[in-house]
Amino acid sequence: MVLYILIIFFTVSPFFPATGNPHWFFRTADFVRLQSLFIQLILLALFFYFEEEYTVFSWILFAALFATMLYQLYKVFPYSSLFPRRSRIKAESDGHVSILAGNVLQTNSCYPDFLKEIKRFDADLVLTMESNQEWEDCLSEIEKDYPFTVKVPLENFYGMHLYSKKELKNVEVKYQIEDDKPSIFFDFPLEGNPPIFFCCLHPAPPSPTENETSKERDAELMLTGKRIRDLDKPTVVCGDMNDVVWSRTTRLFKKMTGMIDPRVGRGFFSTYHADYFFLRFPLDHLFHTRDLYVGKMVRSKNFGSDHFAMYYEIHHKKKVQTPKNPKLNGDDKEEVEELIENGKDNQ
Image 1 (cartoon, rainbow, N blue to C red):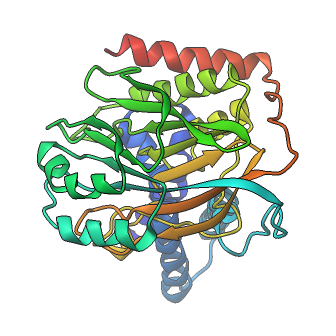
Image 2: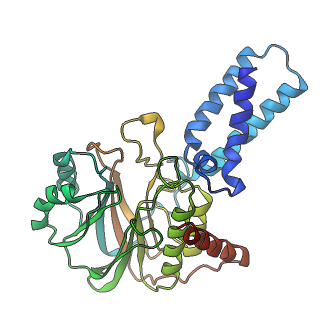
Image 3: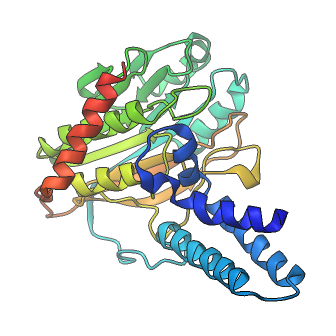
């Protein structure tokens, strides 16, 4: 009986996000698809091991569980290394920028370990999230190599710092939805090419200890998407999005912007939780417009945070213009506006 109850729960729960309910309880199933797939496989094996007499009900139970497993595989398979990449032939590059982006965990005091990662990757840009004044003080030594900075030290686990080797243009620190959750926007200059517009985000997750629903997070992603649609320049969006790429919201963001996820065909690159292998989700993302491509993509070593950092080398494609925005149908437009309004109304 207990086995039957578990099978029914793990058959039904993967569809919770499809209800559209923004409460964390319903959205959690999106985060744990890889873990629940593993549990479903165990339940399937236990079902065949313990089932002595196959009835119509037991066959229906088996069929439903198996169908749910296929549904989950359909969701996550494109982000595995087994999925064919869009193009394994690298486009010709006429300029690039590299970035090391990591949620450092405000209470983490392993500052030398993160400084080692900064030195190891030697990126053009370093982005930190959850960085407070103490982190700012400890990172001050890299300013001899990264003299151009944007500093937003906060003590609420949503501080953000940006360090650059080159002077940045049109820098903005915006609080798009929540008054204590900053985002950083800027143009990074590329010699002989249009500047690359960067959006650095860290919205709050839906969870029992944070925001009760995903409304604020979803709204911030949609607002960023609308801003990108108004631009005509190469664009990168990166940061700890507190969402998984196969969620409805992130898929809608990619649809409205036409942006590419470089993980497709490369692997999950799960960045959280750094200390628990079984409880890891791909929460830290980078998306880019089609006039760019990611040449190198590496997950950092563990530096004491609950997240790994991600390093990317972003190249501008030679003789490729920024593509036009994809068209959205009426339902998609309505959903985007509804998500934005729900996020604003929730404040």
